[in-house]
Image (cartoon, rainbow, N blue to C red; front, side, top):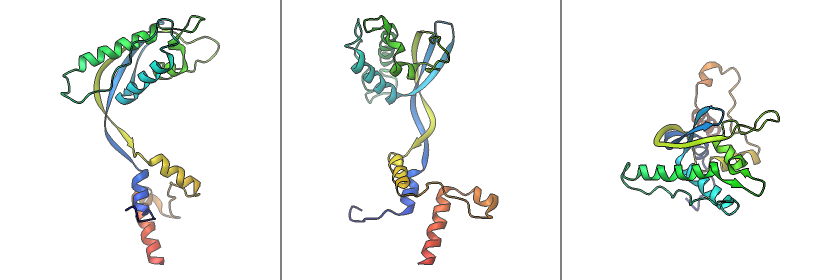
Length: 199
């Protein structure tokens, strides 16, 4: 394939389509000081990466420091070390909530990188500051049936936009409901067949 300079439209279509799959997620049970409670679902890898980013950026700037971030999940039996990993994540999250940041006594939980993940409304309206978070608890891991984008989808869409090609296939004039129910792949196949007949 490395000597083939062109890409088939079917390949492009497959690259920009989305798939559904089971994704490992964890639920974060969050409580605010005003009594409000809510749950945030995060992809396991996203949570692990976020913990690492918070530690790398703020551990040396917090007055009491931060514990090491939770490690990457290791392969093994599904429940063999689940409890220990959850305790490790909860200990880190508790320290993030309590950590003082900078000389002015500000809390780390008010920093945008933390608020965007943990707060339900991280852009408060008006002049009143949002209520502080009093508790964050990581619940057990589960699998979520979700849409998964193809790994190179954004690159293909960017390339198509740069070339002036729309990734949205317009409906033919007078096509009606039958054409509206066709998938993108069906439209691409029909267009390829039309072009083949012209050649």
